[in-house]
Length: 291
Ligand code: NDP
Image (cartoon, rainbow, N blue to C red; front, top):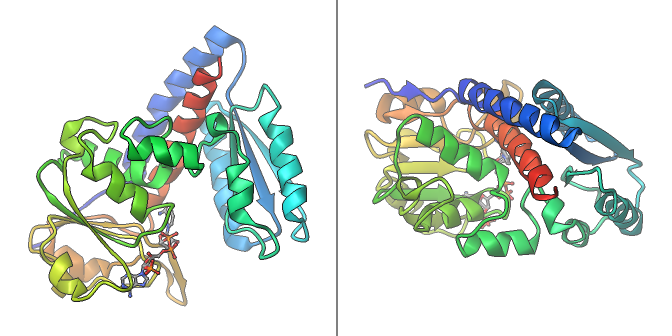
């Protein structure tokens, strides 16, 4: 059996085209463009690439991006002052602080200081709380992108067993939360799953993952998911981005997974482009809500 490759790049383009139309409507009604302010601290090469990609994507859809570069020596107080300034800038629709921050910065304190109405990454406890109650203000970008991709390939989650490996606040936990609800924000057919959330202390991991109709790997370990962990015919979503000597690889052994599963997302070109697309969508929503 050879699975179908889920083309995140193509879906991302489709979503960005839709966002571009909605941004143009916003501009013609309000006379201004939505503004995304990105705070980049230090010179971590991966973060520079991520921020550059987000800037380019903003430009493509008509969102104004503002890059605020801060020294790698910045303190928590320096960042709090910057976040406060952006919170109070009426023209700024959305704020993102690119992670990871240098060790001397208290990430939690800084993210908590972002005005929840401008929190386009949906990391603020207010926004996480709203998601957990099934009434999101913003959906977190990576999980939202995954649900959008599944929906656009007609892969419904209702009644399915979804196994998420990884319980980070950014990917695994919100993913599990969204899919286990009555409505993820994208309709009941894209929620109502029976979700198992696995992590590094999970016993008999392969036995659990093998039962999943949809397996989502967000671990950060190259080629961790091997064919013996996949139920034949399952959908496999690979969130991992791992830099190795062979280039970027995911958390799933892609070639081997293609022989067992029905659908597999590649790395690169799978979940990554969708994360950026959903960030643009959230920025537009923030601008609309701020009117
Ligand atoms: P974290 O490091 O925050 O979390 C990793 C999770 O994987 C933890 O919950 C950890 O368990 C679990 N884990 C680690 N080892 C094992 C193991 N042997 N068995 C089972 N579970 C394990 O990572 P993130 O969620 O931030 O990111 C995960 C991956 O996704 C990374 O490669 C990252 O680069 C990528 N990523 C990609 C994005 C995209 O847009 N495509 C966006 C965000 C992240 P425990 O909690 O017990 O430690």
